[in-house]
Amino acid sequence: MRLPSKLEIAPGIALWPGALNAATQEELVREVFALADVSPFYRPVMPKSGKPFSVEESNFGSLGWVSTVEGYRYAKEHPLTHAPWPAIPEILLALWDAATGYRAPPECCLVNLYGEGARMGLHQDRDERALDAAVVSVSLGDDALFRIGGDTRKGATRSFPLKSGDVVTFGGPARLAFHGIDRIVYGSSRLIPQGGRLNLTLRRVTPPEA
Ligand code: MD3
Ligand code: FE
Image (cartoon, rainbow, N blue to C red; front, top):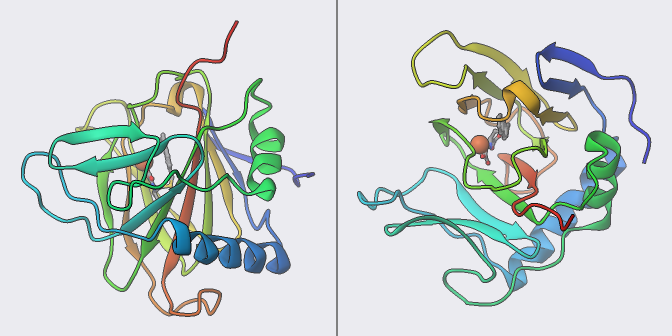
């Protein structure tokens, strides 16, 4: 895969607007919903409180990120069906190589499904041990308003829109930045049959063998 030129929107953050063409976006949506046969979307809950997320989630890859009342963790199996997660689609493996150049493939592709009114509060992605690898985010479907700050919860934040087909990498000084999705513009895209937004987040979890 070849990517067009990137925009360095902040230290450690690269954006490729519209990196995925319409046909590739459609193919990814088909693959994501085919995954749901084996690994159905489920609604995670917050550790301790048990409060349900507003997004639904599933995973591809050898390790899936899950949140239960016990805490966050990477798991080899779906928390409800106990089936192994399906493999990460080839398109996404090629995208990871092109966007990160990292020496090992991603182990996790978290799939977030946003329906009307869904959002994601400010958080850090810090359950991974391979923090030298960037995180790759793919947006599909409805537009979203993304917010990112620094390495502490307080302090300035910036917002920018994410559109269908956009690819963003977060590495180096941005890898532990607080970030979230304030809202989606429900109905702004017709890509996803039932409406809404999909976010695919690719991560390396374990350090590659030396
Ligand atoms: C900045 N997903 O799954 S993608 C997540 O659009 C997550 O569903 C959001 O945050 C979504 O964890 C935001 C952008 C993103 C993803 C990972 C990051 C930004 C990041 C990791 C580090 C810093
Ligand atoms: Fe995140």
